[in-house]
Image 1: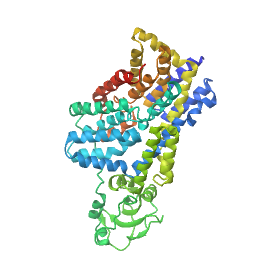
Image 2 (image 1 turned 180 degrees about the vertical axis):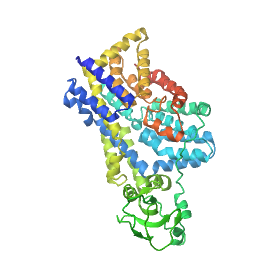
Image 3 (image 1 turned 90 degrees about the vertical axis):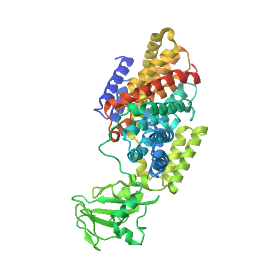
Image 4 (image 1 turned 45 degrees about the horizontal axis):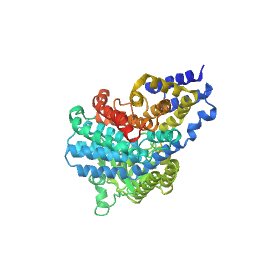
Length: 526
């Protein structure tokens, strides 16, 4: 089989696998890399080169940096400020939420920003009597727009910048994306203000995240022994380093039958039992034997609470991570996380070191300073995203080396006729928009970028406007809930249905297309 034909065949199978979702995305990506080797299109070293690519390491490092801000409550504190400033005004809350998530996304990625702000957004909506569905899609869409404010907003930006470094005269600057990112954020906010109330459903989810901002006060009301412990409830300590957690004792737990009393340490020696509740009533006896269904109130450091409540012996009522994010103030570790983030942004903006070095140094600093424990750092990395990028990079290599990209690029140029580069750019952008609703926008850009570069070469014009336009329409994943993880993330809490995305998303898709085709060439000429 000819290498070009084999490359297209492997791509077709991969796209079908991505669309059906019957095979995990990471497995499909690895299968692509292995298939390119097995068919002789690439050498083994070329097929596996993606796993050593600096882009992949940089993306993984950004997940750790993002976790540092989330784990220390920095993002949640910003969310609480929005809740306080927004008051009961729908318009004010909407603008504040969208602007905040856009700014956060630029620094800590789309998924991290939305995951951090989603519970707060639902709580704010409930507080002001607004259906969560009126806020959550705007939250996700503003995050997509905010990803265009800086290099760190999304893996797509990093990937496209690397393509530009190799084929378009140099990488894009850290804030160069903001030239189109700022109009996109403004346009997204204005469209939401204009259309949101009419085009978004007024629908609530079956379950609503709990407001844990006054968790300590709630515990004081539920456990009278705490208030009596030292005359004011100071036995409940919720600060930047220490917290509390309620856990339920399930059947077959090793804790069943153990004699406990307030003030004793747990078997691990890391946590203190403050109180015991049974059948909804607090036990006041000096000692008690633990029974199935008992609720224990535990105190310790946040890290110890997370580690020691994650096993099978207990079931957490409210996860320590959720309580910490909503109730704990920003402490020393939060300040360190902010300083590390600022230093990374400074390094990236000035170009003093390669992006991967800045990212790895920042991630290492988060771990060494104790902001993110090593185990949590491993868990923070979205390995699916990392493997997807690493596995699909060889597909981009195959498109370039076999001539497949040149073939498609020449076909687009021929079809455009006298329309020139603007029509070719429009065709490529429409292709990305369509594919981006069905498969990962990261995979889409990795597939289409070599085609865009080849089309630019055939037209004898700069590839920079083509690559920047790819990042813009790569972020235009608005029409289906499966387009991006954040679209799925808000689906349940917002009570959305599949059709809600297309109904509300088409004006935003047109906005991003217009910016990619009309605005991008003004700043990055052909």
